[in-house]
Image (cartoon, rainbow, N blue to C red):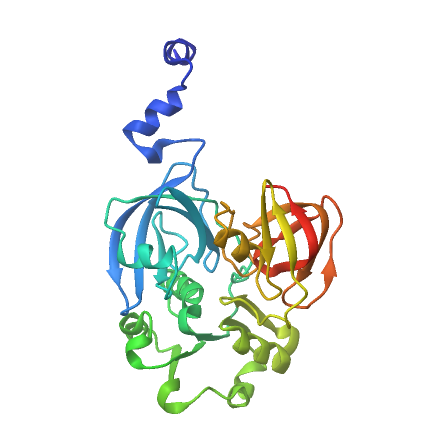
Length: 335
């Protein structure tokens, strides 16, 4: 029957017709439909997504790349999955960035019923199996999102026995999941919640937490300064998830870069991704901070500069992460 149906639909495939009936039925393209939208703060919105049949599941703390069409161009961004990993539905929380191309549309312009493009879950910022008996979770800003997935998963499986969550945000109104965190702490005596409002209290001194670290697994997610401080203080004991691009090294020489048929003069302080997009080149991208490898392009000739370390590298055929690489003289990228 399948062969007969395929013959009748040629040159299209039965898959193409199923996709017209319901985009989530596809076995070759992964999509998801937004089934609920909830405002968390003035800037942050949680989207609940029903994924298509190709979804393989995820572990709490992992991330997913989401493709969004803006003005006829598909852009990919990476967001942490913050729901219970045992649920069939996915949740991501998007914080609108000033001047952003994708995040404002997702956060403020995504109605229920919107179909989004998805990729399989990825990332190793996850709880070990079995989960540790004692946990210290240190987060700031939107860094709470992957940790929220861990808390929701653990809470759905039984009482939280010995978890300390220390979260920083400028004000009470900026605390994503504020009411749910308060409720979780009330329902689970084994969860100790410490929220620091940095606008009034200043940044947390990590020395205050030294007494909690000795016998706990430590998970840290937030701005680069927080991650660097935690790693310097507690070393290999810390599991990190980066949510903002790391500080860039001093500007390099820049150079003229050919993106296929388009040639661009790239400033020494700009990333190859930024420069290409500014010139109108359709660039692959994802997290935009060197984690997901969604922006990788082959280097045909020339060399590039790592924007984090300042190191110059590259040989023909090397794969270049354009979001964390800048120009160092003339170069050509295959695109």
